[in-house]
Length: 298
Image 1 (cartoon, rainbow, N blue to C red):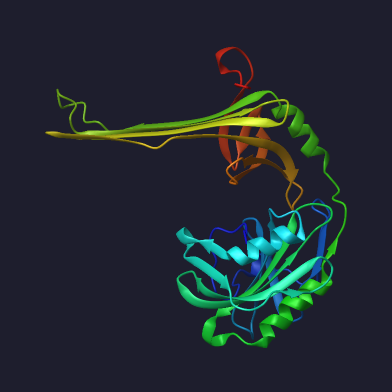
Image 2: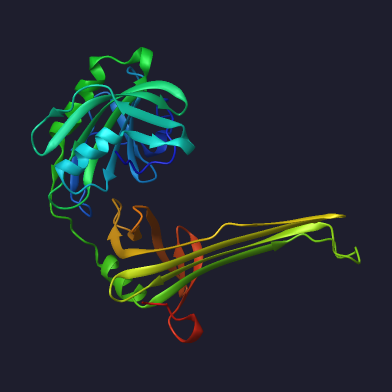
């Protein structure tokens, strides 16, 4: 089961500045739900998190790439795995049919490298990306209260047709038939040494070609060299893929460039435009469309 999440803390929410209670509405993605009494929530990176002062653990609400109940079922059987984040939760009960094109079950394993248990509900959304509700805590603290919290949120969920903000279509027109390029380089060579043998350097380049027909080509290169008297080395890690691109709204109504690779990977970049400059996730990218800097579309 794929959850758009990089890192989870199994602690109570401590930031008072962004805490939310009551009914939460995200018209841009067609989602509405109610935070249970005694819980508070806040927005994270692609996920809505909730914590309680009386029940140790965390609630996570996130989207899924699945577009049918059967796909959700297959993802559940595969488990929630992210080795880099120390996450490996596997189904430890039978999957229950909860109605409304939804299933739920208990998962056990490792969460942030700690023994954990969770109740997870997957909901098929007729208007877009499916939804995942996960209520998790340490294994020795888990009880039926966590199941009840998950089901309470589940019952409050309302899907509707997304209200697409105008900025999404504006970005679609702005990006179609363009190349987005990010470049960075660094050098720390000791130029006082006549042989230039000490120090090091690296260069990074990311190139995204967005074709008008809706597919893209992608190229990322990272070159590193290090030098020392009598020793040198070179490391390179590059890849190239292709798939479909589109611009979608996030919960806050911002435009997001989504790259869906044929391999199953999905990259997402929040788009912004300042002083005729294009930014992806707050990082400047050069946007070109002609000559040798035109996108390669084939």
